[in-house]
Each structure stands twice: as C-alpha cells, then as structure tokens.
Image (cartoon, rainbow, N blue to C red; front, side):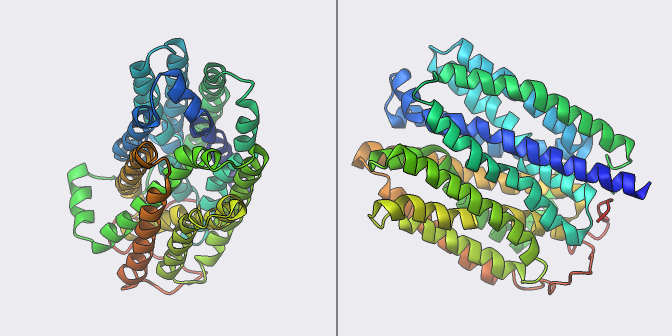
Length: 423
C-alpha cells in the first residue's frame, strides 16, 4: 500500500511537471508574435502592450482567488478549470482576430485567469499536500522545472515557426492542446488524489479576512512581497520584451533561440540546486543570492556586446530563474501552514504580477519614447538588487538553521498542521 501511494505521488509530480511545461506555450506564443501582433492590430508597441500588461496584472489579481480555489476544491481541479478556460480564451482571440478589444478581453482577462489556475499557486499547494517538509523544495523544483524545459524545447520551436505559421493558427493550436489533453490529464490526477485521501488540507482555511489579518502583521510578508515584485517584473521583461529587445539589437535568430534554450537549461539546473541548497544554507542568504544574480543579468543587457546581451544574459538569468519562486513558496508554507498557503501565496503572486504589469507597460513606453529598452533594464537591475538586500536582512531573524531530518511546524500558524504525504 505504501509503495502504491509513493508510485501515485511520483505520477502526480510528473503530471504537475507536464502541466507547467505545456503552460509555457501561453506566454511563448505571445512573446514570439508580440511585434507581429502590434502591427496586425495597427498599434505601436505601447498601444498593443496593454494586452500584455492587463494579462500580467489580472494574473496577479486572480491569484488569491486561485489560491482559495486550490485550498478548497483542490489544486488539480483548479488546473482543470484553468486549462478549459485557456482553451476557450485562445480560441476566442482567433475567432474575433480583427478586434483588439476582443483580444485584450480573451487573452488579457480570460487567459490570465486560466494561466494562474494552471501554474505556480496550485502547484505549490499540490506539492504541500504530497510531501513532507524536507522534500518540498526539491519536489517543487521538479514540478516548476516544466517551465525550464518549455524554454529549452518550446521557445526555439516558436521562434522557428513564427515566420511560417500565422498567429491565429498558433493560438488555436495551443488552445486545443490545453482544453483537451491537459484538462483530461488534470481531471484524472484530481480523481486519483481524492481516492488516495490526499485531496483535503490538514485544517480548515478560515475566512479570507482572518488570513489577511495574519499576514499583515508579519514584516516578513512585506519583504517577500518586495522581492517577488522584482521577480515578476524581470520575468515579464523576458516574457514580453526580451525577444523584441534582441531583435532591435540585431541579434541573429539562431543566437536568440540558443540563448532561450540556454536560459531554460540553467533554469532547470538552478531549480534542482535550489531544492538541495535549501536544506543546507539559510534560505534568506540563498534568496538574496538569487536576487543578486537577477540584478546582474539585467545589468548585462547594458554591456553592449552581442554575446553578453544574449548568451551572457541567458546564463545568469537562467541561474536565478526558478530559485526565487521555490524559496518564496517554501517560506510561505513554513510561516503560514498548509491550510492557508494557497491564499497567502496568491497574495504574494499578486505582488509578483503587479511588478510584471509595470514592467510590460514601462518597457513599451521606453521603446516608443527612446527607441530602446535600456532604461527599463536599469530600473529592473536596481529593483532586484533592493529585493536581495531586503531578503538578506529582513528574513534572517528567527529563521531556523537548515536541518535535513526535520519537519518543523509552521512558525506563524501552529494550528494549521502539516501536509499529508510521503517522502
């Protein structure tokens, strides 16, 4: 029986990885077709960037809702809802391809909710329910590395297909994939999770007002939120403006594809390394290092050399990419407990996406005003550096030393209990 449960847990981790991998197509098609879409709708980049800005902001605004859904109905049922909604949204964008407002509503509103319901918030709740404390970081890294493989495999694929495949066909194909196979696989996972007795949290989450009262009195929440805002802003730069930035700099198509693959490879390595290092280093120092790497990566875009701006940026940014998400999720569980982790991580992800919203729009304004995205790169380098300093000094008080054999109770929510699972 124990072996059967362990086998099921491994399959559910593989399912989470697959969902994260395929969800990268949602932002991947937008990223690669961004400049073409702006021309299609007769807009400058500033005018069209509102679709991406709305997408980023709405993803954050709905993240607390997605967290509440994950806590109450289960993370994989939430994924089913997101996958179907994403399919409907992307198909709507193609059916009414002549209307910018329909595109913004379909991609920026419906697509944003759907992506939030498929990715980091529900996956963090899923890992919390499956694994004991000492294994959570590594398991979350494994699941989250689906995005890394997406960069390695799917981003170069979209770059190669973009000159040959109209954006309407690309969006329709992604919608069909998510609303079909992905939704069915997540529905199977939700059913298996329920049958194994792992579907419910260890304690009732309580009202949303009580959750907010708990986190607002914790200074560490604001430190995590500041750093995560910088994380979201830099990720949004990659998702929306990076390929266009490289194109404007005259980078060859092959180098851009290679750089995105390198970013994904380093993201994969850093994600796995984070789970291992979190058991051996104090997490506040490790988080500060990742934000310092993120700041350095943005500074490399200002270095001038084409290899540094592409391959150098990809290497350093990839090394930092997943570590901030894994460590923030671990902090979230340790400080608040399994029962409300989804809601609290949803609040943090709201701040993540507020940074993303600002980066998307400021990047477009910067380009239209100056013909360059360099001023945004400077601002993002400063913001992530500040997040690193805040993490190092603001999270070290009261942090437990790493203890590989320990499975401590949450510091701020002792009644919440631990997640049920196996190693």
